[in-house]
Image 1 (cartoon, rainbow, N blue to C red):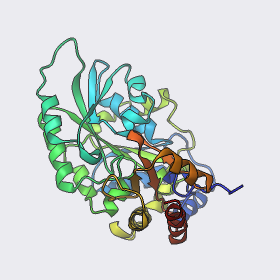
Image 2 (image 1 turned 180 degrees about the vertical axis):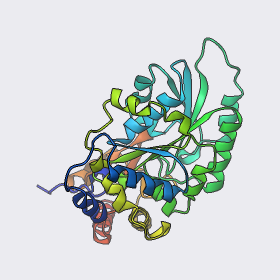
Image 3 (image 1 turned 45 degrees about the horizontal axis):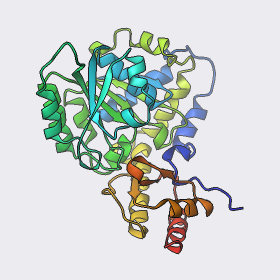
Image 4 (image 1 turned 180 degrees about the horizontal axis):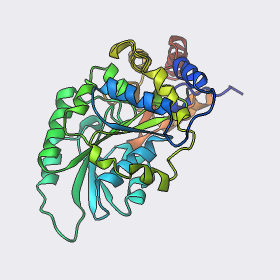
Length: 342
C-alpha cells in the first residue's frame, strides 16, 4: 500500500518552521506571569505592531476561526450582519462560529470573481434600506489572500475598505494567509491606515505551531476584550508559548526578509511551479500558495490511491496548497503522478 503524503492537502499539515521553533524553545525558561502579562507576549505584540507600522492592541490565540468569530462578535450586534465574499472561510468552513459567538449575528455572502468581493455587489447591498425585519449590515470582512488563492491588490483592498467605511461599516480582515499576500506584493502597511478595526493575523499556516493573533487597530474595542476571550475559552494561561513563535517569524531582518514573509514567498513560488507543471485546468489565477483545478471524481480517487492526500473543495474544484516546507522535489513528484494519470 502506498504511504500517504500530505504535502499539498493544506498548509496546516506542515510542521513548525525553524525560526518559530527556536523562539519557542528559547522562551521555555524560568517562570513568568500568565494570561498575557508576561514580557514575551509584550515583546511579540511589539513585533506585530512594528511589522504593520501601526498602533494596535494584540492578543495571541490558538485558531483563526476563534479570531474571526470573536472579531465579528466585537463589531456586530446580534441583530446585525457581516458582509463577506460568499466563498470566504467565515461562511464555508467555520461552522457558524461567528453567529454562535455573536449571539445570532448573520454572515452574508457577496458575489465577485476569484474570491474577491465585487465593488458593485457591495454597493448594492449597502444601498438596501435599514429595516426592523432584517439584519442590516454593520461590518465588512475581507480575506487576503482569498479562499481561491488570489490576492487583493493594495488598490483593490483600499477601495473596498473605503467603500465600507464610507457607509459606516466596521472592517475585519481575515489574514490567515496574509503573509502569502504580502509576499505576492500586497502592502500590509495600508492595514493600519485604512480605517480597519480588527485584523486576524495568521501564524499557524505560515510556520507557527498553533498561534494566530487578533490585532485590534481600533483600540476602542480593547476594553474588556480579554474578558471576551476568557468567556470564549481563548485567553490562554501560558500565553508566552503562543506569542514566542511570532518573535521567530518576525525576526528583525527588514520587512521583506522576516521569516514569515520569506517562507511565504517560497510557498508561493512552489505553487507557481506546480501550476506550470499542472496537466489539469486551473480555475483561478495562482497568486499566492493555493491552486484549484478541474478534476473528475475518478481521477481524484486515482490520485489519492497513488498516496497523495488532496481535498475536494468548493464548487467541485480540487485544491492543492503549498506550505513553507514544500520542496521542489515534492512538486515534481506530484506533477509526475498527475501527468501519468492523463
